[in-house]
Image (tube, rainbow, N blue to C red; front, top):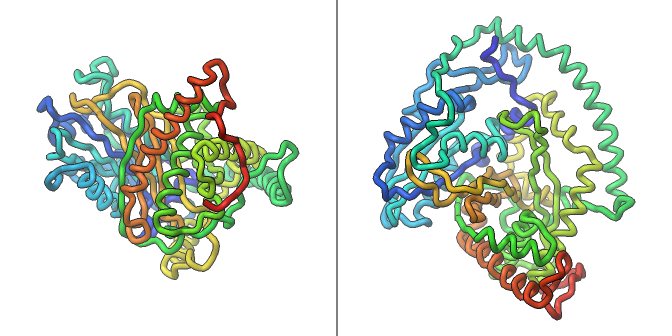
Amino acid sequence: MSGLVSLSGLDVAFLALETPTTPMNVVATFVLDASSGRFSHDAILRLVNERLPRLAPFRRRLAGMPFGLDHPVWIEDPDLDLASHVHRIAALAPGSERVLAELVARIAAKPLDRTRPLWELWVVEALAEERAALVFKLHHALADGISANELLLQLLDPSAEGAAAGGSFEPVLPDPAPTRRALLGHALSRLPRQSARFARLARDTAGSVAAMARAGRGPAADGAQMPLPFHAPRMPWNGATSSERTVAYGSAPLADVKRIDAAFGTTVNHVVLAACTQTLRGYLEARGVALDAPLVAAIPISVRCPGELGTWGNRISAFLVHLPVHLADPVEQLLAVRDDAQSALRVHAELGVTALGEWAEFASARLLGGAARFYSDRKLARRHAPLVNLVISNVRGPEAPLYAAGSRLCAAYPLGPLMEGAAMNITVVSYAGSVDFGVIACARSVPHAAEIALGFSAAVADLSKLAAESLRRAPRRRGTLLPRGRKATRTMRNP
């Protein structure tokens, strides 16, 4: 049937790994200027209904295969009711950013209903300064960071007048719900392709395993290294994860980030990682946590090829990088992050780990899900070294201002899901001259997430001042410039 869409192995993995304490929700908070009076719940409901033909994931729900012969598939939901997905809520007084963050934390903590399309949109009214917000919640099985960004952009316009030139929005008539016979035929039709794919993956993975063995024995020929899993120091949020969430937001001028890049020969991603390092160092130091070793962060990256742009689902891999919280100097942190990230990316490319993620296609979702619940219920994350300390994502967003139902988008704060045992996720997106920052964590182990968000902004400002000082002193040199008296040392030391 044309209405059946197969889930990738990673899509299925995000479904299977979800537990009551770790819902696999991707959340985006769009803060809007509602002073024009055009913003309303009804206007947003009309907007979603108008754009629904372009929002295929919003129209699809899961359908299981007979006898569990194959993974579930996406089908067009013949009973889609937008009113059950688009909700309206008023923020409590005073309608501050912290009030919004507390509301979003509650939204993010609740799993989505798998009998319906896996998304929600909350229209938040009564925010301070004549503002409102749209809070999108999607299941990670629907989209990764890149595809979620592309999906949500379908609801935004380049001007307050809308997207009159954006093409037609002809209604989509869903196919009837597939019969068991149709589902069974779909599963059987995939078997020959799956057999050939299994043989290819076995060959590719053999090469990856050999490369991992070489990496475990020492650095590559060019000196490149990457942290190994289960070698991260235990932090307060590395243990059993509760169902309670805390959320906080921050931002920094993109111009400051670019100034830092120009002075120190880095990238936006390096600056983001360094700012995260600095704010985490301050947070941990204030709580008396020993800072004698770097943290280990998992960094998701897109492996979506040009031909896959505009498609949904998950096409991601990840590499591990050290966050040198043991270094006190911000520039030393930045340069250490730059070198480690570049080294880890080279190792990641050599390992060919994109093939490893595809093995989820052949794993039993029932077995994987059972193992995830067993691990979570028995709080096994307390009994071994953390796989990683946290996840940090960085997504490039639009450079020009955008509008939703005629109201200007002022900020875009992203949030990713938490993993059992790594109960902090930091996500950054650039938008219209700003770098917007969202942190979500287990509320029991990170009760003061707002300090981390504020620290991110302060870290970028600190590095920007140091960069301006460097550029003034030697305006013609780029790439390795340091403020006078500083050295780019990698020596580990206690603060």
